[in-house]
Image (cartoon, rainbow over the protein chains, first blue to last red):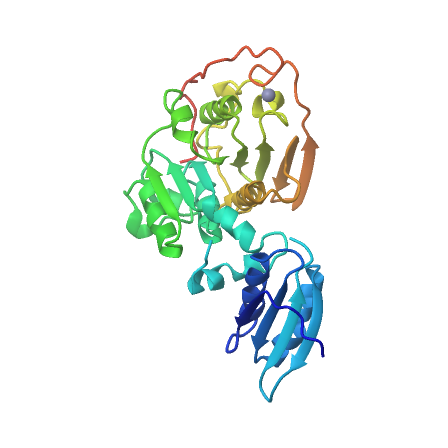
Length: 81
Length: 267
Ligand SMILES: [Zn+2]
């Protein structure tokens, strides 16, 4: 897969819902429109729910990837304030 | 603003709301709200705004806590009877949320100091229990151009309206003068269902947060009337009165007045 430019990376391993989304949302609020946020997490529930909520908030999910037995990597592009 | 881990957890249910978010929570944290009265309405308003993380909350009230307050004034306790209401409420609110700066003013608000007291605040909440104060607060907020969230309760009925000076009507557009003292319920008639101020104060706190967040539609130009017995909410449209003595085209009230204190208050 083509590697997208990542403007910000957060590691939310160990966090549970809803703090996984809260941390992701706070991170994306602090970024510029068009920038890409990379989220490293280890909660299967959050790997499903964060992309859904990000779409609800108007952002684009570029990639959801299971990178090993425990971890996922999400790429989200900020589309609006 | 960087939130601490505790703040991320405390405000998480705000932050996940699209209408609030971290930026909205920051607005709440920077807001300054001035509450008149630490009684039936002031208690729930102050309680919820403290929980919401409003940065600075001032409360003004001259009374001490009495046993008869505890049926509805939920910030006070048996062990604060005899203490100034503003101090009793400050203790409760500070224990709930140490982020909030609570300013307790134990004094009666008067025409001489109200403008100076409210000048640094973003939103004013009227939780007073008497007409002289209600009109004084209305006139002062119109003159100082401060948003005012006004509430009133009696027996099983309550009212709320939000006054945005320069945009919507004021309290005097609705009722030009306070009722004559003889028409105001006497102490024996002035009962109130204990939970009623919780409903009305909750609505007032909601209006305050919407003003701070600049989200949603305010009760501007509308009076919301709640009947606890009937379980109904009615909205009455209130037009701006061009001949209103305080906010009309040619105001006749250009300085603050003090009315007689000859009213029974719902102490
Ligand atoms: Zn008016």
